[in-house]
Image 1 (cartoon, one colour):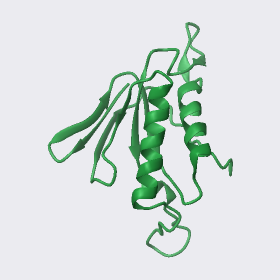
Image 2 (image 1 turned 90 degrees about the vertical axis):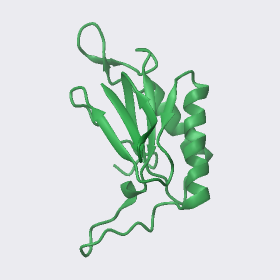
Image 3 (image 1 turned 180 degrees about the vertical axis):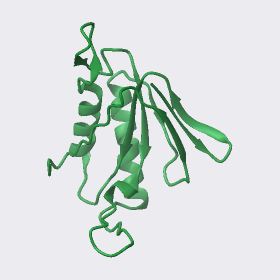
Amino acid sequence: MSAGVRVDDRVTGAIGPGLLALIGITHSDSAAEVEWSAEKLCTLRIFNDADGKMNRSVTEVGGEVLLVSQFTLYGDARKGRRPSFVHAAQGDEAKALYEAVVAAIGARGLRCARGEFGADMKVSLVNDGPVTILLDSSKVF
């Protein structure tokens, strides 16, 4: 597994084995969601153990995290033909929480590469499995 982010002609973040996490931030998010997200990403047991079972975390396997801010995760396309992004936090509010998640992951001993907040990013991923998990701190699903 590997992942990277490019903005224009420069790499802003890249990792080898680990997690690519696309993170959406909404207006009601706070420090509680920052801590929940960092803890969940660092401890979620989705890497194989010696028996091939998903039983190890990114921390246990010595992996890295690439965190990419993605406001379109809050796109609501239930009505009409154009998604609405009214639930996505904007600007400084969203950037501060994004940076806080990066710092909280780093504080847990993992290298956390990043995209560039608000930029037109080109994200690449070589997915192992593939394994794709949707996490929601508000526990709607």
